[in-house]
Structures are given as C-alpha cells and as structure tokens.
Amino acid sequence: MKANSKWLKAVLTSAMLLVGANAMASKKVAAPDFTLKSRSGENVRLSDFRGQVVLLNFWASWCGPCRQEMPILDDIHKKYEALGFTVLGVNVDLKSEKAINYLKDTPVDFPVLYDPKSKVSELYSVSAMPSTAIIDRDGNVRYIHPGYKAGDEKKYKAKIKELMRE
Image (tube, rainbow, N blue to C red; front, side):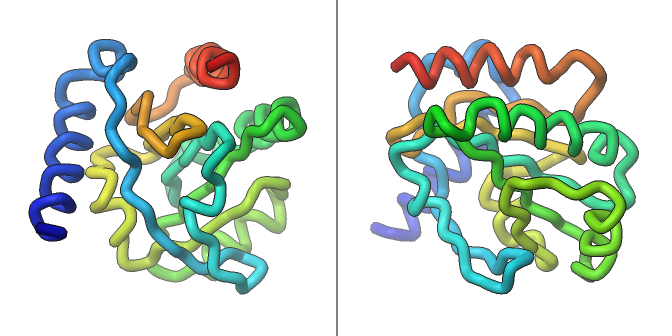
C-alpha cells in the first residue's frame, strides 16, 4: 500500500506540473516528506515545518535564473518569516562545495539543503531549474512554478499571502 501511495503522490505532483499551477491551485496534494542535510550539518525534515507556509525552491549554482532569484527569495523569507513562513532552498549540485562557494558571495538567511543525488527533486518531478513549490500549513502542495523570470516573485507573494490567510 505504501508503494501505491508514493506512486500516487508522484503522479499527482507530475500532473500538477503538466496541467499548470493555476488549474491545480485549489487542489490539495500532500507534499512528499523528506529529510536532507542542511548547510549547518543538521538533518532537516520538511514535516518539521508543518503549521508554516513553505516555499520549496530547487536550485543549482550553475543556473543563471537561480542566481538571479536567490536574493529575491531571501527578501521574501525575511519579509514573511515572522508570520509563519519559510523558504527552503534545495540545492541539486552534485558537489555541495559549489553551492557553498556560491553562498559565500550571495548569502541567504533561509535554510539551504543539499540533494546531490536529486532524490527529493525526483519526488517533486522537478523538470526545470529553478523550480518552486509552495506548501500550505497542512503540508499540501498548492502551487508549482517551473523556471524563473523577473517578476515571478509577484506570483509567489500573492500565493504566500493567500495561504497565510487560510
């Protein structure tokens, strides 16, 4: 039964990507839980953030749009953190040293987690870099956005505000 449940979650998450975030915005699909090592060396589990709105951002140090987006995500994190919101940055570089070096020049306050084997990226059917999922307080994926271009942060903020009011 657990295998079927994991498969169903993967299929539903993939469907959200294929159908589009706007069409699925009101649907509630449980966010696949995971545990990853953080840059502080501690294990971080997604379910530990239950009760908060979470912006889960998959990124890589070699990705230009990811680099452009990181300071913006940090600003969003700082703006809404006190209201029960967090950003979790999931780095997918094969060697975390590349991300660590990048973060020396572009520091962020939100937790950065390392997924060098892309196992969590696969759980979320990540098809573009960066990719963003916004998860509600109950642990459901409510918005998915592949890629990044200037102005996309307005969509993120609108969704964050909506979910924080729920």
